[in-house]
Length: 97
Image (cartoon, rainbow, N blue to C red; front, side):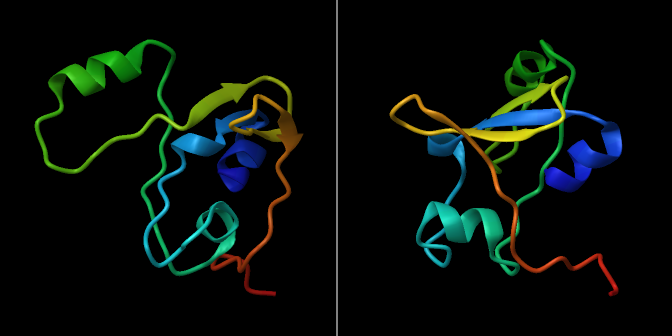
């Protein structure tokens, strides 16, 4: 998400409780930063999510995790309602340096 936002010149606010966490990831930090537990991530124009969900008939679940913002900053909304700056970390598979 950080890479997508940086390249698009936007930011995002994601909801912590919406992040899919596998048994292997075990917690939110691992789900956000570990390098071997993958999910497909994509964005849609506002209003397109409902159209997609209403026509989706595959067993794979789609989860709306947040919103793209004009502010060029990554944030996470915690279950208690607090919004924090999302610090990205973890292995970058696409960086050759």
